[in-house]
Image (cartoon, rainbow, N blue to C red):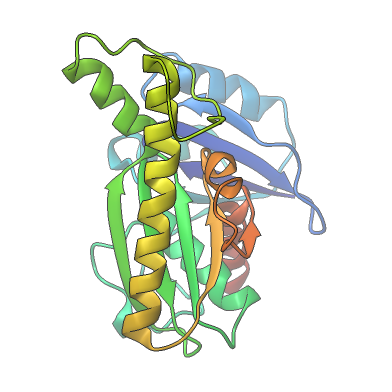
Length: 241
C-alpha cells in the first residue's frame, strides 16, 4: 500500500494506492497551523507500507515526512523520472516534474502539454523523446480572484461558478465571466504558441483543482484528470523503489 502526498501552496493532498486503484483523496490546508496535527491523526488511522512525497513548500516538507514515519521517496529532478535529465531545469517544481513524468509515460510517442490549474496556472510540455521543452507560470484562477478582492474595494468576495455568458450584467457574473473566459483565452493562446514553436500538434491534458471550470469552455482539451500529479508521483516511486 502506497501513500501518495502532494504538498501544494494551498492544499496538501493525500491518496492511497493499493497497486491497482487510487483511493479517495484527502485534503488539508497547507498553511493552517492545525494541519500537521490533523495529518498525524489521519496517518495513524490508515495502513500503508511506503510513501512518495511531492512538495513545493520546503518549510513544511521535513516536518510532514517525520510524521509519516515510513520509508519515503521525495520527488526531485535527480530521481529516475523517465524524462531526459539534462533537459530538466534545476528550478523545476516537483509537481511539474510529476505532471511531465506522467505525460511521457502515458503518451510516450507524443508531444504533451499539461495545464495545471492550482494556486498557480502552469503549462509544461514534453517531447516524444522525454525532453522537457519548457514551462509557463501565471497566477492561478482563484489566486487572481483573491488579488482582485484585495485591490478593488467595490469587488465583493464571490463563490466561483461557471458563468452563463461572457456578457456579465452585474459585478458577480462579470467577475466569473472575466476569470473563466479569460483563462480559457490564456490556455488557448499558450497552446497555439506551443504548437507553433514545436511545429507539431500537442496532446493537451488538464489537471488541478480548478480544471473543471476550464474543461467546460475549452473544447480543445484532450483529457481532464484531477489525479494526474498523483499518478506522476506514483510512477516516480515505482521507478526509484
